[in-house]
Structures are given as structure tokens and as C-alpha cells.
Image (cartoon, rainbow, N blue to C red; front, side, top):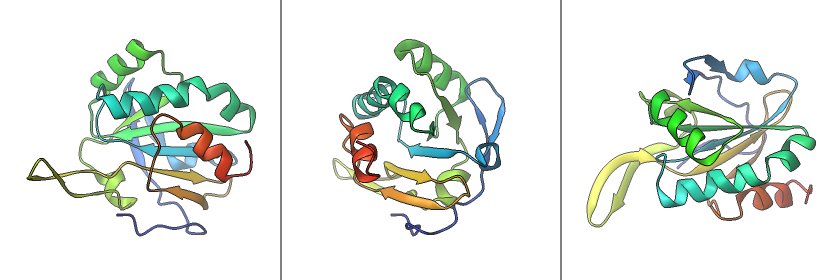
Length: 155
């Protein structure tokens, strides 16, 4: 699980999005950012989470939040996921897990008796100055936008 908490500086990151364009934390200086980590495109929980954020995207952006997703999927898989579900936000291809490791959300997981390395579904809300203002280690995939807005007193 993540070692980061509210009040910590968000680790800088550099990656590429679904279109192969560079993306970094510094791109969001002066803006509020919802940075959400999820395991895999086109899986039930990840799709529910992405679609919930899509459905509340206008509400989030009207309150000054940008939304960016991060998973180990390739840019091509991200582009397909975006097209299939009409996602209005960027997705970072973290194929080497550097960003997930920097945020402390990459590690050993167990499912059906099998142990493997993967992403712990976690969301970080980062303010205009790069400070983490909220961490969601337990994400309600079907109501995640409401979870974020409620915790920040914006619901």
C-alpha cells in the first residue's frame, strides 16, 4: 500500500498518454488533479470506475479538477478503452510501473491463491501546488466521483 498521505508532495512523474504524447505532473501546475491508478483496461471494476468518472467529468472539471488515469496498459489499449467507453480524460501508459512505484501503489497481490505483482486501486487528489490533499485506498468503483467530491466537501 501507499506510503503517501495527505500533506505530502506528490511525486513528479513523466509518462505517455493514449496518443503517445508526453504527460507529467508539471503539466498540471496551478490546477487540481484527480490521479487515479487502476489495474487493467476493460475489466469490470476498472470499467465501472472509469465510466463513473466519465459520467461526473463535467461536475469535476466545473470544480477545477482535471482527471487522469494510470495503469500498466499500453497506449494502444488505452486508446481502445477510451474509444469504447467515450472517456473524456487522458490515460497514462505506465508499462514499466515507474509511476505506480513512485506513488507506492505497485506491489504483491493475491487472487484465487495466486500471487502476482500489480496495481493497488488508489486515487490521489493533488492541489494546484502539487500537494496531496486526499488519498483513496478503498475505491468504490461505482460511485468514485461522489466519493471524491464528498470527501473534499464539494458534493
